[in-house]
Image (cartoon, rainbow, N blue to C red):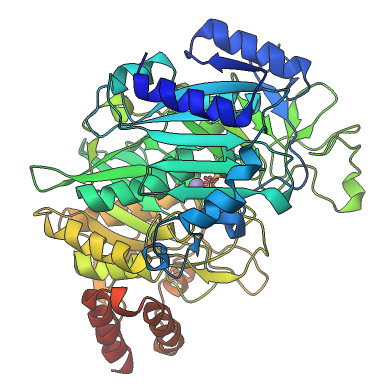
Length: 581
Ligand code: GTP
Ligand code: SPV
Ligand code: MN
């Protein structure tokens, strides 16, 4: 047993005073035992085991259904280190305000010790965490989302370098809910929530907030990105990453099914939410997926939109806050099957289709092992990761932002990521549909000053002699009736095709004020359910529109004061000149 882990576990047991301590080894026997326990206590409900073997439903507290960003803190010694886009709490205040909430918090409960590995087994890029939690739901999810148990302790050996992740459900009250990150001591405290991103501490807390600070020190990037493999009909293999804000299409793009009208293209999934990016000795950028499962948005998932996800979640999947059908199967808005009589909504109440209420919570989710995905990449477990040809930055934008355009340079691409803004979704509590700045889709997940983070992006770029191309994409432009103009989903391959042509030195494009935009005939529309004229519209760049955007960008960069890198101001000023011309 690793003595550093043992010592910390003893300390936490003394603080939280659980009735019993259970060390998790990740075995099959343990999965069966914990699941049985969760069913007995009502935490999980077995679904129809004939139709959905190994699948369970969890209903969370109705006030605990999404990430709570206003209760999420970076606890660095100085406020400036957290920067203006993070909530900051001093470590001393955290000791006073948050630590007492753990005192005796596990009395009458079981304390689970969950060692977990983020990243492929045997990878020098992988990191170890240990989560202590009193939630059996968290343990069962961590088992899917990470490489959990002995494998993590083996990776750690006798070392001291692991992230201490302390979690308690507390009393689930938002008034006593805090998610605190301590980059300096490599520690996370989360209390008062059992929800995904707040409680499965390997995901957003470790693999993004803490890892981003490790990356800053060690010369790499932790990003909110999907990773996919694209094989062209000519047999050329490319890997692409994409940073889109929460509920903006990462899982869907990662599992894309090529349209029938594009034979010969093959898509494989390396990751759907998080990428760790390292500059390689060969001057290329390499990516690993630190996760082992998918924690995906259920609503909108169907055989039409994402058949690979539908096939992934047939077995061994935990569903959270979806609707329940009388036959013990699940349903959500956008499901292939029509709703039936006698369904229960996400809170377990009889659902009236005429009420206008949602049956499934808009942020209801599935947790499923990545290995079950029919299109999982053979490189998913490669300790070296995959070399990246292109990076996409995408967001939900009903207007202004074209379907796709390309940055001129790495610095310009960093600027396109930095100025990303998106309409908010149900993945975090708060109003939906409000436009907010979300640099690199990392605003809620960057563990340090975002100005310094942008500088770090520029520094990483300098190490790359063969940098990936950088692109902005937008699947979400709407017509006056509010309908999406671009068909999206599988048809997004048409955009990927142009992106990869550009990376290989081809692809027709025109230089505009904002970057390289494809000519309308450069996008392959063979067999697509959209007119060339509409695509022309989707590719329009209106200078007046961008004039307005410039003002907001300036305000944003000013927020970081001296932390805003000169390179970002340079890009901003050059854009202003081009827009004026
Ligand atoms: P997180 O797990 O929160 O990080 O979300 P994500 O970025 O993985 O988003 P996901 O792929 O789960 O998609 C979220 C919602 O957007 C779902 O309801 C999808 O059906 C919808 N969506 C995804 N891709 C497209 C697209 O190309 N067009 C349209 N119109 N909707 C899309
Ligand atoms: C997101 O909100 O970006 C998610 C879900 O991927 S959560 O794990 O809650 O962060
Ligand atoms: Mn996400």
